[in-house]
Length: 243
Length: 75
Image 1 (cartoon, each protein chain N blue to C red):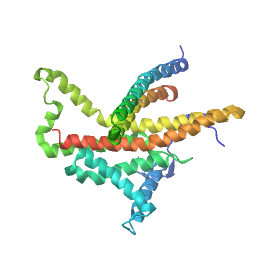
Image 2 (image 1 turned 180 degrees about the vertical axis):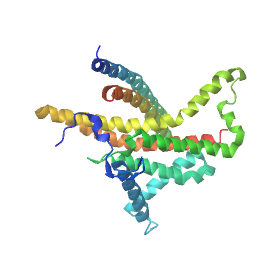
Image 3 (image 1 turned 30 degrees about the vertical axis):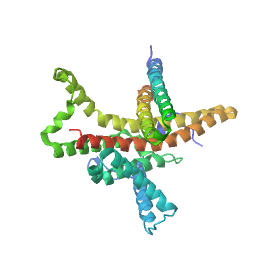
Image 4 (image 1 turned 90 degrees about the vertical axis):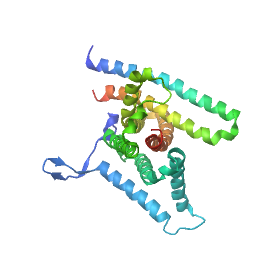
């Protein structure tokens, strides 16, 4: 039984298959392994669930249909019917983040969304998509987004820089929200686990807190996947409509 | 003041921001309960927005906790 003296040790990346090309290190790490497992699980769930598609769904098909309908309703309500072409992307983002977070709850496993590089890359991809969609759809009129209609023109020198800054901070907040939730949750569980071991006989108290934290972590996992996805939908709505 | 003491004091100071987050989350859920009590039929619509608001406010708590952990463990 290994006692972690530092709660951040669970986030270290280990190379499973070292691959070096020149000076580039593109080894297959435990993070990449978890991402592969997540993708395989999602694909297996969806393919197996619809392999024998019945009108009255069985259990596995129900799970897949629940996930599909949940994200489809989210996209239709927030982006509108003309935004439904973005549904495959939003669904992929939701399932990837959800499975990534959930796989990290397995003991001795690794949460690949607890690294800022992964979450920031996802957030940057969403930001790039939203900006490019806005430019393709509205052209140069995209810049009217930064001046809310109905505001007096004298406020423009103050309002426009603030709006631009808040727009540019979207990928940062999107990435950091997911990263901080995952990292803080797992660090807290590691700290309470260290307390449990250190207190010995009276360790049942931090253990009880750890059990409650575990339940809270699972709620936070699903919630953060939902928040990431619905913010993607809201940014897409901004890009398509309010320009 | 040596570096270790400064780290601990800084981490403690960063956690003060969680007070504002507590007020904010309490505000969200008190309004949620009050609005469901006024109009129980609106529960499904209001609940989703309430949970979204909770998660966004919780994110600010996590930013403060992140700064606290950064000060404690990486500097």
